[in-house]
Image (cartoon, rainbow, N blue to C red):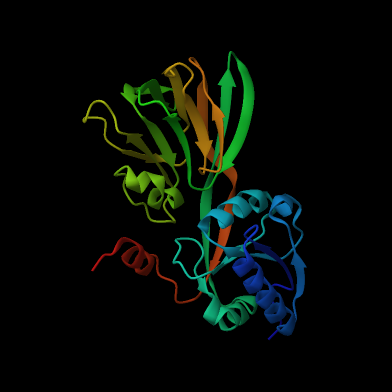
Length: 275
């Protein structure tokens, strides 16, 4: 049987000897299976030219790589370094067996939506970013609430005082949004969840909306410029009073390749300690 994926880009966590060692093993494994291997630096992911990308590391590393390669329509798989992840799920002990199956076309494919966010200040767009997990508007280091208005498709939802608000994809529903008592969304669901962070009024509950909706967060009181918008928890921009953060579904998606026996519910049971 011929290879479905012939050229493979390999990414590993920075400054991690264990990740580098596994990436070396992965390269040997891929070469033995007949692939051309490209070892890539994480910061160069946006220029990757391959049929498949494989990440060695944790979910955080995969989040970064996924955002960068999604516009290039390159599918992505992840090698687990020992701690179970929601996204990185190929055990290194079974790496060769599972990759042989994937390379020959035996896998589950999941398409995950990305969020696209833009920051408008005084009528000018000053920052744009994408997120696989979430876009978060939140207070900074000072223990004071911020005030913001939430709109969906131009319709006013509410005005609230809180520590912030999380706008999460189904992928991100098991990340920060989960710790803020947000709902767990099935990965394939076409939806976005809005989860308040410690709202001053307990009646402000999480909302689930259609993924085609446009969300706008207008900052009314930034707590003396002590608030931020962050993207997957990996980059952030300081906010000011009057700033507007617009969030919508991105045009492209992340394509994750899973082992044939992968089960989202198995992962939930293991990660969350369900019986």
